[in-house]
Structure formats: structure tokens, C-alpha cells
Image: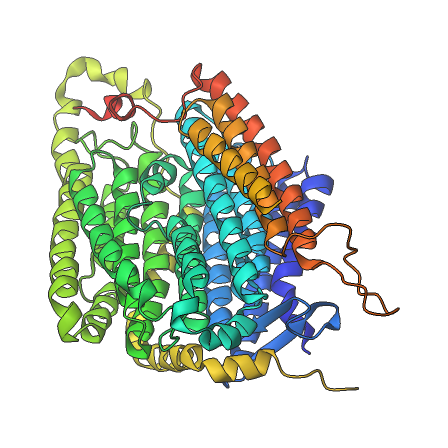
Amino acid sequence: MIHWIIVPVVLPAMLAPIIGFVMRHDIFLARVASVAGTAFLLAVAMGLAALAADGTTHIYRLGDWPAPFGIVLVLDRLSALMVLLTASLALIVLIHAIATGWDARGRHFHALFQFQLMGICGAFLTGDIFNLFVFFEVLLIASYGLMIHAGGRDRMRAGLQYVVMNLAGSTLFLFALGTLYASTGTLNIADLAAKVPAIPADEAALVRVAAMLLMIVFAVKAALFPVQFWLPATYANAPAPVAALFAIMTKVGAYAILRVHTGAFGPGVPGTDGLAATWLFPAAIVTIAIGAFGVLGARRLLPLIAFSVVGSMGTLLVAVAAFTPTATTAALYYMVHSTFAAACLFLIADLVVTRREGDSLIPAAATVQNGLFAALFFGAAIAMAGMPPLSGFLGKLLVLDALRTPGTIGWAWTAILAGSLITIIGFAKAGSALFWKSTAIAQPVPDATDEEIIPSAPVPARPATAAEIAPTMLALAMLAGLAIFAGPVADYLEQTSFQLFDRAGYISAVLAPVAEN
Amino acid sequence: MELLVATAIGALTAGGVYLLLRLRSFPVILGLALLSYAVNVFLFASGRLAIDMSPILSKYGDASYTDPLPQALVLTAIVISFGMTAVLVMICLGAFLEADSDRIDIDETEADKDAAP
């Protein structure tokens, strides 16, 4: 056993209370500890990704109990990839939060941030479905705190909605787990993958109920139609760096669908064959449409970005719904891409919105560094909409290419292509209102003579420092890197999805008898 | 006993869902509490209903035992739902003090008011 596997869970779990209790009055100390911890997490995640890259499935037995009886952490290519994605996104977001001072606008930002990382990394690493529930709760309770960070009326109300929605989802998760345990007698994902195929189709009614309940729970997390309605209000009202971090939270839902519904209830299982895909595919199509029309209709910048996240989740889940290795490869590529694209959009939006009066999409006097912000927004928007040269184009191309089967091509291609077009129009409209028309408004202001006094009345916008722009640049650079190294990345992801579909390999690795010392 | 437990779970769930749909802070808190009671009893039942049996395998003869795992799951679920209820109460209180209203749903027209040109 390699003890590094549990470090992504234990490190933030130890760091968070230390930051919360010891460094609560010293924001500088908390910042240093938080950045150091996250940077170390990133290094560990890179090490784990290198460890998993050879294709072996590493097991970490908690308390050294053998697999179906004790809880195991499973490190394969998919979990290593997701932990690496989490750590790199977290570092980018953390630098932004510190540089813009968001972390000092309320209490305990860094402690909650580390607890959030603990929950996300744990959810990606665990091989036990009840343990997945526990890590979901950890990441949710931290996200409640982050969501209402810095307070404010609208944020508190949106946060309350978010909490109630997710508590109802957690209850549903427990009902699903109870049903699953009652019908199969196990909650270990590998053990489920071994036992569920043995259940004949006409006796699998309870397993099907449990599979669909789990699907609904994960759909709530992944913001899939018809349970996507919490996302725009939450993301639009959350502090922007937190919304950028939440970009990975929707991916937790997508990951759980991949892991559970491919691993345990996957294709070829008589009891649940085709069950997930039947519902996931149309729901994902509708989600794309909602996202696209939301982007077109939004009157404020942050809801617009939130709706583009909904649309990208739709695109991602259309690919997941095919449940084939090729489509899963495309889904994974798009997952990595859309995480950074969404985060990048929220970060640049934060820089722009704090320098304007609110985030309404109406022309107002141009802010400082209008050109720079416009360029960054343009880059992030074409990535999100799926235009070349950034990775969004390649991601959508891979998804389209994977969905060429006769049954899906019509709906999937229409939805993705039309959705992309509408998203582009929405982003173009927003960008021109924010940056382009604003320059026209700024011109007439100086020629009025009594304007000499007025400009000092609104807070003169401070130009963004290099540290504030760096995280956004870094996220854009990740997108560019993802496009430039698309070949090697796609190869790695292809092996990842083959490993995911190799159920026998997963089962034998996790349930392998413990070697005697 | 099966009928009794099943009816109890059903009644708790129905009450919970009804209260959840009231969209006011206090009924929603109560509703979520009822739902979590329902799910706790449901988890107990998922290990088969048994009376007067210890959750420990006896090494003296063939004394029957009840499944210990659901009890561990219920314990975890109780702890989590207790903590979550506490967080929810605090956030409800915060939202009520900030917004001077205990409604859960957000009035969209109100939220977009400042967005109108």
C-alpha cells in the first residue's frame, strides 16, 4: 500500500482546523498556510497521476481491512486525473481569491476552502459508495460556508435555496443507498460491480430503483435537467472565486455517474442495462438547450456564465450517456476543458464586475484596462462556446465524433451545434455590451465642464495588478495547453476510459485478497 | 411489524415532503428533519427487521444475529443530518435577518430589478 493515496484527503483535513483555530486572527498566516497546502496538494496529485499512469489500480485499505468489509480508496487513472484537476483549479482560484482580497471579506475562507478540497478529493478517491455519500456531505457543508462567504441579502437567500436543495438530495442519496444495500448486501463499488450482473433481469427491480435514485442524486450535483434550476441562482450569487471553484463541483456529479453507472450498473449488466442511458441522454439534450437559451436571455453577466456552465454540463453528459469508451474519452476531455473554461470566465467576470456598478449587461462607462479585460473575456468566451483555437473546439469535436451512431446523431449534433451557435451569440452580445459599447459611452463624459468633480464621486476603479490577472491568464494558458497537447492528453484519456470500462480488472484489483506480510 | 415500520416511513416521508414544499424556512427545516428520520428508519430496515438479536456474531453455537452494517450507516447518517440541520438553522436565521423574509424561493423580478436598463 502506498500511503500517498490518502494524502489528498488527510492534508486538507489536518490543515483546515489548524487554519480555522490557530490562524483565525492572522489572515497573512492563513494565506501562506493555505497556498502552501494547496501547492503541496498539487505536487502530490501530480505524483499520484504519474503513479497511476502505468494503468495499475492502486488500493488503499483504511485500517488494512480487506475490501468488501473495510473502506478502500481506489487510485486509478480516472481518480488521479480528477484529483489533479481539482488541485490545479484550487491553486488558481486560491491565488485569485487572495490577490483580490475576497478571502478577507468574511471569516474562515481558507479553512472552508481546505475542507472543500478534502471533500472533493475524497469523493474522487473513494471506492465505497457510502463513503462517497460522506465525502459529498463534507464538500457540501464546506460549500455552504463558502457560498455565503461575505454575506449580503441576495447571497444569503440564494445560499439558503442551495442548502435546502442539497439537503433534499442527500436524503434521496440515503434512500438510494438503503435500497441498494437491501437488494445487494454491499456498498463497495467493486463488489457491486461483481454482484449486480449476477442478478437476473426480472429480479432486479429494486436495483433499478436504486440506480435511478442515484442517478437523480448525481444529476442534482451535475445540474442536469430537470434538477438544474438551483445552479444559476447559486453560481450567480456566490462570491466569484467560489463560483470558479464550484466549477469542479458539477464535475463531481458527472464523475459519480461515470464511476457508478459505468462501473456497477454499466453496459452489459442484465438487470440495469440501458437504464441510465435512456434517461440521461434526453435530459442532457434539454440541459444543453436550457444552458444555451439562458446564455442568450441573461441580463446580467454572472447568471450568463452560470447558464453557460449548465450548457457545458449538458454537452458533457450527452457524451457520458453513450456509455462507450470513445464517448467517455471525449467526455473526459470536455470535462477537463469545461472546468478551466468556467473557472476562467468567473475569474475574469470578477475582475470586471468589481470595477463596474453591478454586473448588468448594459453599456456603462468603460473601466480601466478595458482592452485587457475584453481580450481575456473574449478568450474565455470562445473557449466556453467551443470556437477554435482553444480546447473547447476540440472537446466538442471529440464529443460530436463519438456520437455518430445512427440513434444519437440527430439529436446530439443538432443540440450541440445549435447550442454552440446560440451560446456564441449570447457571449458576443454580452461582450459587446460590456466592453465595446462601453467605450462609446465613456467618450462624452469629459467634455461636460462640471464633470470635473463627479468622477471622484464613484469609486475610481483601481487597475488590476499582475497578481490579480495572473490566475485568469493561467486558466487560459491551461486551455491553450490542453489544445496544443490535445494528442497526448487524448491518448491518456483514452487509456483512462478503457480502464474505466475494464470492470473485471477493477473488481479483481479492489477485491484482491490481502497478501500476508 | 413490517406494516408498522413501512407505514411509519411512509408517513414521515409524506409529512417531510409536504413541509418541504411550504417554502418557508421553519416548515422546511422541520420537513428536512422528518425526511431524515424517515431515511434513518429506512436504513435500519434495509438490514432486515429483527427483534432481540445482537449485532455481534456469537461464537457459542448458532445464535442468530442482526446485520450490524445498517446500524453503523444509520449512526453516520444521524450525525451528518444533525450537523446539517444545525447549519441549516443558522443559514435560515442569517437569511431571515438579512432579507426580513423567511421565504425560500427568490422572486426573480425582484432580483433582476437592478438589471433593467
